[in-house]
Picture (cartoon, rainbow, N blue to C red):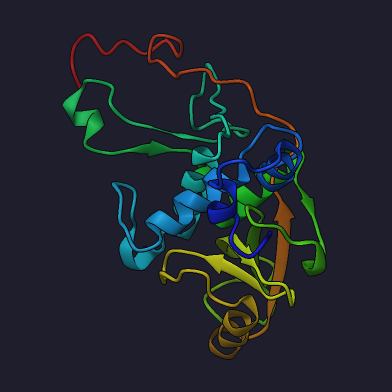
Length: 225
C-alpha cells in the first residue's frame, strides 16, 4: 500500500477504511494528494524556483499545500511573523506582484522543519515512514559551507517499498522516487556526514488563514510603490 499510494488511492471501490489509512486517518492533510503533487511536479519549475540556490523546501511546502495544509499568516506582520507559513502574490500592485512573498518556513529547510515540529509533527523511525512524510538533511560534518547542526535540505516521501526502502521525491537536484539509502550515501560522500530525520506530517490542522493586508499593518499604499 505504501509503494504506490496514488494508484491505490484512485482505485474505484476502495474500502473506506483503506482510503482513510492511505490518505491519513485524521482527515486533515491528504497524503495521497501530497504525493500526487510531488510526483507530478518533480521536474517542473514555478515562480519561486531558486535555481542553483535551491528549491527543495519550496517544493515540499507546495506539496503540503496541495495536501490541504492551510497557510498561517500573522494579521500584523504577515509572512514575516515568527510563526508564519505560506506564500502570497497577486496584490494588484505591479511593483509588489513581480515577486512572490513567502515566509522563512516556506522556503528554508530549517524553518519548515521547526514550524512543523511546533505544530504537531513528530520524528519517526525510518521503519515507520509513510508516503507524505518529510525527510530533512542536517549537516553533521564540519568544514563545509553549511554549518554543523544546520538543516539544509528537504524532500517528500512518495513511496515506501515492501522491503522498507524509503523513496523521496525532491527538487534541487530533481529526483523522483529515488532511494533514500542511495541519496544518503551520495550526500555523505559529497558533503560529509549527514543526519537524516523523517517527520510525520502535522497531526493538527492549521486552520488560521489570515490574509495579510497592508491596511492591517498600518501601511498606506495609496500613493503607489
